Length: 390
Ligand code: COS
Image (cartoon, rainbow, N blue to C red; front, side, top):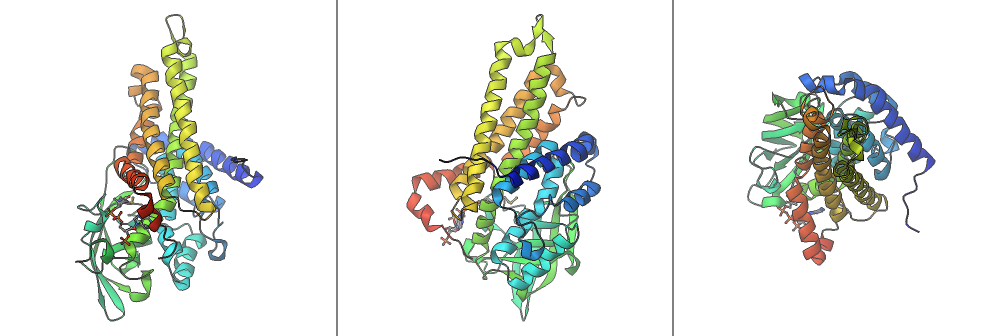
């Protein structure tokens, strides 16, 4: 029988993450949202408890959790505050290319750096003129002797202002399109410049920065995988991280659903709680169904990875559906609150603002549909992408 019965260890970790979200994140989440306060103390506590770096294997000091367990934790962090949750989860995105393509020395050094101290790393793919269209990036890495010299600028970099190192994608062959991109680990102190902190609509407690590389010299051994194979490394990374993003979106939706459900039981109009009106009941019912469906897609996309199977289609299904669910459910939660939902004193407008980024980062909902369409229309070519090694 196919089922998703969680192990005792998974239940315990989910409970621990929930309790952390409730006690450490929720009390400050709305306050931190106002000014975009950096959640340093929360990072340190989460790191101490093992709620960060969950996929780093035990031999490099991490808990080596599977993807499904990681998704359970990310849902709870998203429920607590997805801005802070994104900050806590970002090391997973930055380290996936190292775990997939890094030499033993790179893994020891950089994964170890994150497990020995509460440090942060960022994933640098997007550029001002290369968002969805990754292969049009302009950042270059030119080999000079035993070094690569990197020049260019990356934008929308989560944790960029606080990262100690970056996984950076750059063109090593300008004329080869996606087959001319390579990935590197670049340390902050090698001359990386943090240009700009973005002032965002939502997830305001997370840091989003523009990062510039002016003749930054990187040792050749910091190349991840083979030269010119960086595009695939990025795609394989996103296959592995989109389930976590989907889980976070489920967490946001669940938070909004709970606020709306509770409010609908209290708010009286026409002599009865609004939960007694079918118009509201149907909204609440639709929210609940979408959240269940989004969670099941998320768990499936993670479970495929845990079973060593390709999950490109499943992770795009999960990311697309969970992100759109978060947007729809939070918007409906504002609707259930009526005029109060639009006011900052009430909790749901923050969730609606936070939800929006879920449809944008780690591949927009349109890019997920593009991946889904290709996978279902051309399954044979999709199978050929079943790369497990870079
Ligand atoms: N796993 C492994 N390899 C993959 C892959 C995957 N999931 N998806 C694509 N590839 C490979 C293809 O097999 C192809 O390989 P060859 O060089 O052997 O032909 C290569 O990568 C290029 O694939 P494709 O032709 O599909 O590339 P496109 O330029 O059309 O781009 C999309 C594909 C749009 C899906 C990709 O650019 C993308 O995901 N964009 C969104 C990026 C994103 O999420 N940005 C957010 C930044 S992180 S916050």
